[in-house]
Length: 363
Image 1 (cartoon, helix red, strand yellow):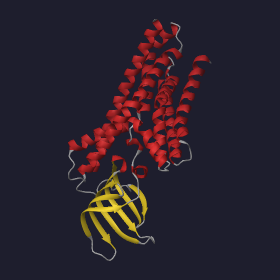
Image 2 (cartoon, helix red, strand yellow):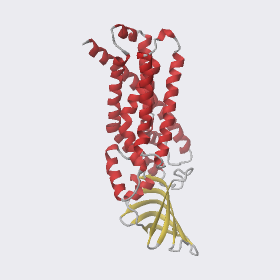
Image 3 (cartoon, helix red, strand yellow):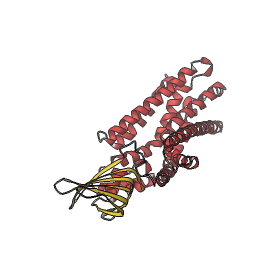
Image 4 (cartoon, one colour):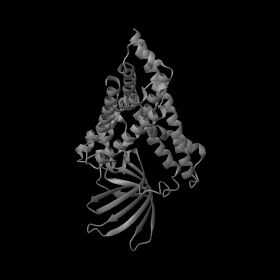
């Protein structure tokens, strides 16, 4: 009964610390993103502070999803340091509890939080991210060339019986089926340039792209303006998603069907596979962060060296982040399988925390 009471107490303390840490991260991310949008919005005549704040609010869940493991790491460190400062860990040890017994509740809570983050938070985050793109595109509808003009956007090449075409879009919505600020370069069967088409938007239909507010610049002909222009295409929605869609905007529950459709279309879909594996591994990654935090935070507070412990935990989390980025890039480049790219950081973080904690507690 005592063990159950203490387990609930340690688990609740950990949960409250993680929530406080996560809310702090959300506040920092919201302010930084809003300031960046305000800077970009200075050149957008239709932008208002309220609309920019709404777009920033919709983007925050996707931003915080990526830094959620560090919120758990910081929350776990602050929880155990607080328990050590108040001598609660000393009392727990004197009652016969080992470190594993008061770390286990936090690991269980981290696994539950990771499961909720994957199954509930991620679908909400993906839909809000798609909604933010829609609002941004609507706000910049009068200035198609202004959207993300500092980036090269998305590119795809298509071939048909009439020749080839290269499509560039500055923005993508609805998983690539709707494009914004579109430039199309068409070529004949001998790969000779024919014309350039600038359009405000493009929508994928069965067998063609529907370009809105198109301006056509052909060799030897004066420019033409058309409200609607149909560009033939042999691209399917699955092929378009591979080029224009970002895996982060696909909800967790839809990823298996996306991967299956990409397989049927003969596409690699490395980004989708990696995203799916990362979401599956998220609960275990959060548990690994708890073990890392415990390995650097369970020393008695009166022994000193608190700054060194905190720095060690932050360094461990930073190194794990670098490792995850390396494996992620290697997986996207198909030098590493998506399973290995997603689970290697989890394995390394868990093993490091487990071995360090085992050495400290059991010699």
